[in-house]
Length: 576
Image (tube, rainbow, N blue to C red; front, side, top):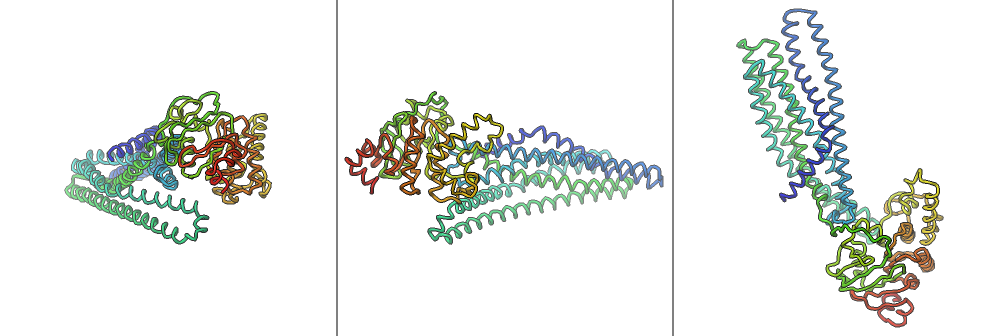
């Protein structure tokens, strides 16, 4: 826990340092503003003593003009200072959001472990915003210190007792405010945890809405979210109560402090130690101090919430990677030969198999868990408990994960389509290709057309109102299951990696279309390594070689026709 807190402080410090220049500018302008605010009651006291008491109209007009200039300076210094502070806060939050997204998208994985997507979204939005707001809080704290310092100096010059009250009382108030912020910090962390959990559950339920309706489980889902939402509400109310108690107590202490200054100033005026103008200035400064002291209460609350959020952000950024990242470059060129030796992970139990380069290899399984584990190993989402996986003779653990992902693409059957057009899902860079050379654009378009035709996704495009420019909705919900599968396969084929691993790409399409897709897949991937993990006879029939994983081990090898004739287990798995 201590190391987690330290990480939170490190994240907070980095976000502040990143905006130090802008926060420094805002703080300087804010100090000018606070200086002017503190001088206003001083000038009013001077006006009373020199113009009002002496009935001097000329001096009155002069000092009123000085006050007018002062208020113009106050207005501009506040506007510019607040703008610098807000921009620093927003840019710090933006920097943190980018860091969180980079960590989530890191090829080594691990950031999403134990967290729902909605929870990560909450950390990247609300928590990042709260940490960014610390920049504004620190700047405001500097403003408040400047205002209190100016007030104390003037009061010391006017009356030593008044100045000492301010100088000695302010640190005590700050210390008490810090103590009062501790319960808020704890409850704020709990509030964000509960809110993130509620967001994650909501996103999870929305994503599975169709399935829930099909199972008739809507009511159970509603009850689950209601419980989570109530827990989040309770945590929010506890945090709000803690904040209200802190604010109320700090305001009460501040009010008593200001009353003490006014009382001492009044007694000094009665015994002649202060003039009427000085008394007015002292009371005005006492009222002015209410602003900086309230600012300190707000700063304490913001820092408490910022520390809690910084710890949550740091947990994501410091999450242990799912796989250890190597630094060796991927072989160039990639031949595409895959080799598994003694791989043990979940389903696979000491698997030894070879996938030759440039061939289409089919892998059939008797246990779906074996397929899932194999895909995780080939995509390096996880490393096997024992054994090794090699690409062109180099263990995957030695290769740079990002480079490996570019060389070996694992296309899962449950991959997600993004909200946007069908064309943008097949060719993500299409919308950002403006300004590309005509030749390059034509080549990219040709690759897209070939991939669409091979996956028979061009038929899907022709059936849509606006063709490939038609939006598919969030997660591709406007498409049928078979249409989504064809678009996903077209996207994988369009990427054209040296090694492509696809998992059950045709489970939701009819038999005729499946046979056409099988031929298209074989043709477009000719000469490049392709692995199809499936029990589909149509896809396995076009494979150069088929491997059967039975009970976590290689049970048989050969062509589809050979295995159908000679292996009963294969016939049961594929034809039953």
